[in-house]
Length: 466
Ligand code: ARG
Image 1 (cartoon, rainbow, N blue to C red):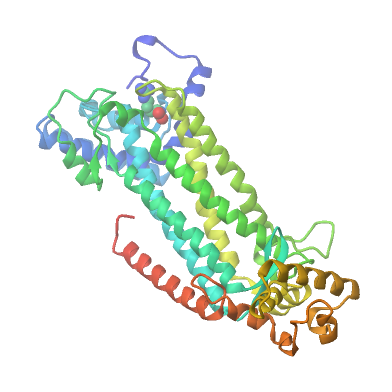
Image 2 (tube, protein in one colour):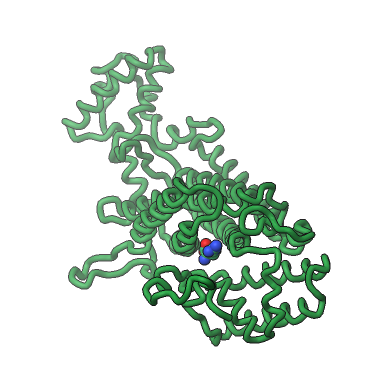
């Protein structure tokens, strides 16, 4: 089979290599073959080509699939992409009949089909990994359900929280991520074949049966849109960017917490490295890389948005640039979810240190203000009193529990002996609102997160939409 240049004559080598996408789109081979088999079978059912020819086509395509898997498929850059490589190999194998496979099809609807199947597949894997990561968070939270830590705003010690409560915040982020991917899945789940190059095909095709065979929810409604649309790539990239942003924030916390200054956690040696120079170091490399790799995922989103923004309808060759970034994002996201879940699984929490941090930071200041409010002081005034009290305690180098009652009463006569019952435990217990850090509420939240996750995994196993 000749290369597709046809009337254009032979292309210069540099043009061949500039145009070729085979180096990376070969990874679509499995989807391309599945799509071609479904298309060919439909052509036979509709009597557009003979059943015998379709038999040869399907047999040949399966052999080609096996060749690629074995690693002895002769990829040719002059055949440009995976679609042409497979079709030309089919011609070598079965002769004339191969030329009939592309009846009622264009590479424009073919590549859209392949990419959609690819993305559906990747989304299923992504959601699976998000669920695993959520399970790792719940395990860690469950194992450390009584551990208290400093909660921060502006990275300044703010109020005591349960460590489990902090972890459950990430559970919620990942829950929204899973929802975004499931939502993107529904819009990717549209079968474009039958759109041809742009205007539809002049054959009595049965589009719905192809969609059914390939497991698509519906067929596309407009042929121009079907070949020109890459929203599903962009949505995946966008959902991936948000998910990576969450993973990156968690990674940043792991980096901070494992520093000598915080010393809240120990990351297993499997996920850290030593320094080639400084023997004392244990660097949190996987967490740093998770944070760093977020950059390339954002970059891939920007790239595809920019590729698409100026394109007139319908297909334009620019769109070939949709793939490398997509593959890179898919690989990066799946790997990062996996490694972060494993890192969490290996984490040791240093409860003594997280507790010490709570004692150090005057973190009960809000609770002392609330104490005064309960005694009748308006909150603003109570806030003012306690902030002067903190100033005094800092100068004296004393924590709240070391101040004498006389010292307290210099700031407000409302302070009484029961001020000493304001402590970390009372601060936690007091925040007894749904979504708050009171141990009772956190236990409820943990149980409810476990139920949600159990339900989601059961749906996944039953082969729900995603
Ligand atoms: N390699 C192309 C891509 O990835 C396939 C579609 C080519 N279509 C065309 N009319 N040249 O977009």
